[in-house]
Image (cartoon, rainbow, N blue to C red; front, side):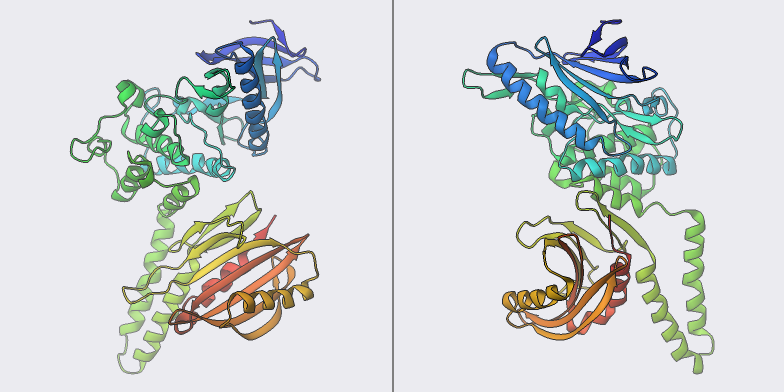
Amino acid sequence: MPSQTVGGRYQILNQLGGGGFGATFLAQDIQRPGSPQCVVKHFRPLSTDAYTLQQAKRLFDLEAATLEILGRHDQIPQLLAHFEEDQEFYIVQEFIPGHDISQEIPPLGNPLTEPEVIKLLKDILEVLVFVHQNNVIHRDLKPANIRRRQPDGKIVLIDFGAVKQISTQIANSQGQTSFTVAIGTHGYMPSEQASQTPQLSSDIYAVGIIGIQALAAINPMAYGTQGLPRNADTGEIDWRNQVEVSPQLAEILDKMVCYDFRQRYSTATAALQALETLDKSPAAKTQQSLSLTLPRKKLFIGLGIALAVGIGGLFAFQSTTQISNFLTYEDSASGIKIKYPEAWKFEERFDPITKELVTFLSPKQGETDKYQDTVTISAEEFSGTLDESKDAFIKEIKDTTPSATIVDTSDTTLFNKRAKQLIFTSKDGNTNIKSLQVWTLKGNQAYVITYTAAVDDYSQFSQTAEKMIASFEVK
C-alpha cells in the first residue's frame, strides 16, 4: 500500500501497525500546503454481503462522529476525515509526533518511582475523564496507545478500540449484527471486556495494570490470555510482593484492577480523585506538620488564661483546614467547574428530571451523624429574567416541599455574574433542614448551587459551602 493514494488526497508513506482488523499508516495530505503528515486507519469488514456492509457503514459513521467529539480535547487526535472506498473504510486523524510510553516503562524502560507512577496515572486519567464524560470506553488502553507528545511532553490517548468493531462484525439476513472477537489487548483487558461487555471501569483496569507494570516491572503480555498471576485465596492480581510500595498507592491500584468490575472505581474521575489525595509534595507535608504543631503548643502554654484562647485557636485551625485542601471537579460536557474539599465525596447524577449534575457529600462526623451535608449543582432551562426566576424558584420550592419556609432572599454574585440567593428551612422526616440556594442565568440556562444541612449542623460546613460557591465557574 505504500505510495498509494486513498481518498484522492492521502498518500501512504509507510505502515505503522496492523492486525486482524486492518492496518494503520503514516500518510501525507497532498492537497494541503506543505503536505502535512497524518495517520490513516484502514478497516476491512469480514464480509462484503449487503447486510454486513450496511451495518458496518452505520457503525463506522457513528464511531467517526464519536471521534469527532473526542478530538476536541487537546490530548486526543483530531479527526480529519472518514470515508468509504471500494467497500472498505478509512479514518484519517492528526499525527502525534513523539513516542509511546512503552519506551518509558518495563520491559523496554526502567521501573518508575512511586511519585513518577502517580504522575503518569494522573496524566492518563485526566484525559480519560473527558472520554468517560462523553460515555465512551476506550477499550484498548495500553502503553503502545499512549503517546508522549513532542515538544510539550503531554500524554495523548490514541487508537480507540471501539472503531475496530466495524471489521469484526457479521450480520444475519435480518441485518442484526454481532461481533466475532472482543476488542482489546490481552493482559490489559479485564474479564468482562473479554466477554464483550465492557464497562467504563474496564478502562480503569487497564490504567491500573499500566501502573503496576511501571512500578513492579511486570509485563502483563508475558502471561498470555490469562493475564497476571492471581492470588489463590482472593482471586486478585498478586503483585505487591514484587515491589516496595506505599499501602495507600497499593490500595488504589488494587481497587483499579479488581476482578469484579463493580468493585473498581466506576469512572476516571473517581480514580483520579483517589490519586489526587496522594499527590502532596514534601514541602506541603512539612507545612501541614508545622500547622498542626503550632496550635497544639498554643493550647498548652499557660493553662489558665491561655486555655480559652488555645481552644479557640484550635477550633479556628480546624475550620481553616476544612476549607484549605481543595480538589477541582470539572465536567466538560456541562462546562461547570468547582473546587471541593478533598475529604468530601461526590456523586455524578445527570438526572433528567431534577436537572442535578453532581452532588458533593460532607464526611460523616460519627455514628450519630444521620444527615450528611450536601452541595448540589443543577442546570435547567429558564427563558425569563433573573428577577423573574426568583418568584419561579420560590414557587417551585413551595410546590415540591410543602414544609418549606423562606427565611431570607438577597442579591449576590456567582462566577462574576449577578445572582440571587435564598435561605429556607424545611423538614426531612424528623430532621429540620436548612438550605442555601444560589443561582444565576447564562443564556437560557439557570445554574443553581444548593447547600443543605441539618439545622443544628448548618454552620459547621457553611464556610466550606460558601467557598465552593465562590469557586464555581461555567465555561
